[in-house]
Image (cartoon, rainbow, N blue to C red; front, side, top):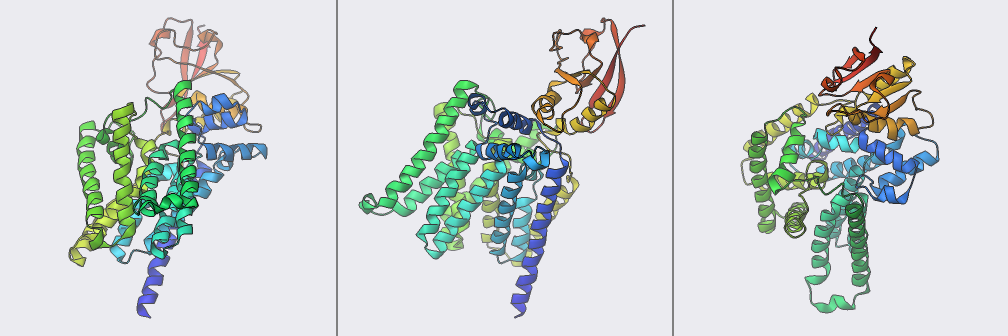
Length: 485
């Protein structure tokens, strides 16, 4: 009875922590202004042209459909456009909670919660209207269903896991690596591990048809993007360390300031060795630790890394990095947790180590909590307040820096209720003649500049510039354009 009460209390603690985190995700979704990539997705959903929509890797299909649904019903607020990401995040975090419940040792539970969800960069993409939270949800669902199928020997649940894996690849094309790796394990486990009797199974052909169908759709879409715009070809890492693991370490540090690249690479190399060793350990000694989810995550992670190496060697595809490497996050967390859980050491020593790491991660997470900041899109944090201020000045023509112009053009001026009255033009002061407009500089009333500011090319113009307001969080500067007296 005492053990049952203790277990209920323990689970209640993690239930509160997980859903307090979900509440934080919801608050961020409500508070954060529209970001650059979200605005471009809104633009494609608002004025749909299939060529332009499918031509970019920015279009994540389920997220696009969710945005389009909102627009059709007249819900165009930023928080409303993020509804499907929030739903996906809730399911993802719920699966994490039930997974933590299966772990016996309390120190390992604490470590699992810290590693799996106390990552500011992960929270960013659980909050934004992008395809990453949806893909993470499907990835978690597929792993959960597969583990349940292994435990209960339910073939129907395994079929569902394959379906969720395919949906992860559709939700975000980067997760195609996860899809292929999962299919390798799945078909080996249920078909190829046995004799050739599977050739007589109708289910085999149905599942192979589904797998090849998903692969065909994703590959066709990626080829179309590459031919049309190739806006995904230049983003990535040249090697495994600089791609997957440096991105992981840098986003965990969660700093946009100048971070020493050499230090990042050193820590990334150490982290890579740890993760790879833990993965090999999880597979090699699976009979000893007897933890199916540890073995599965280790196998998936190694296969995915192998696939990234093959595609880089054969097709020149860059390694996933930063947000495109989010597919690795749940697997890396599971591998590390399974590894430390399986290590043979005194309970006291293990508890000290795990509590120490968990405390550092929790402290770092708390220090980086913010309702307005995001790692990838910090430049746009002050756009709404800046544009609202310019509107209050009854300005008519405003030059806007490229980092901020996208959200103005693609979101604010396309919304039915939130558009601004002034006419904005994209400007670029980084090179001679860089004002990207047919009008003269003097025809602007205000300029919205983003650092580094460089107006030396216009110092001999017949206008003078006067600073009006400065936003210290992003460095956005509003200047008034005035003629010389």
